[in-house]
Image (tube, rainbow, N blue to C red; front, side, top):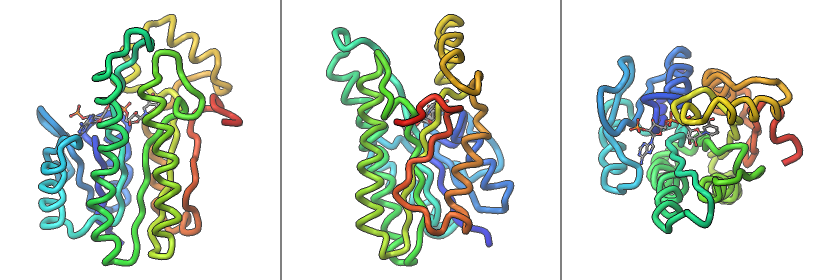
Length: 234
Ligand code: NDP
């Protein structure tokens, strides 16, 4: 059955791989983008998730074209890495506003249709850094760890309504986000990953699609690492 799927930040990187995985399986996929030309093959809606009005507008467009969102993948996220002594309040609050409050905005709006439909699947993209920590990433790690408490609270609150909330925690993935790292940083990371390499975005997408599938009907409140073993035990 073709479902109405929304992937935030589905215009590139991990989000695009996730959007493609759902589209390949026959779902109706909407993606958000902020600027430039979005990739073809999806319903692309312009939306900055830090703006509640833009989120509302995006949902209206999607609902008109695809019907209420049945599967939401909250993927959009940013980093503003720097050591605590140099981290401005804006560095901290802007990362929280996108990664955490932005996720709250899109989840809250999706919930309306899911409650009515008495079913729904929500997958939040966190990070291994959320529970493992990362020097220079206090803002990012705090935002990604917070997604776990957020998802688990909603799993308890809305489980009886047949809505599942799961978290995927990727390790290091080959995207624009990690292209900014130096060769030396990359080599150090790879050395600490048991599988000895970065992930490809498609490897994250496969897990997300599983969590939204019938095969995952009894999984909620889970945090699934897709990190090559980097975060084992965290
Ligand atoms: P990219 O930097 O390649 O892409 C980020 C995406 O998020 C873009 O589509 C971007 O849209 C979107 N986005 C950022 N801010 C906003 C906003 N305010 N409103 C709407 N969209 C926004 O990152 P990745 O693909 O690597 O990361 C995707 C997710 O996976 C993020 O949440 C990230 O934290 C997480 N992650 C990534 C890892 C990695 O190693 N790459 C590891 C673990 C987790 P636009 O094109 O308009 O800028």
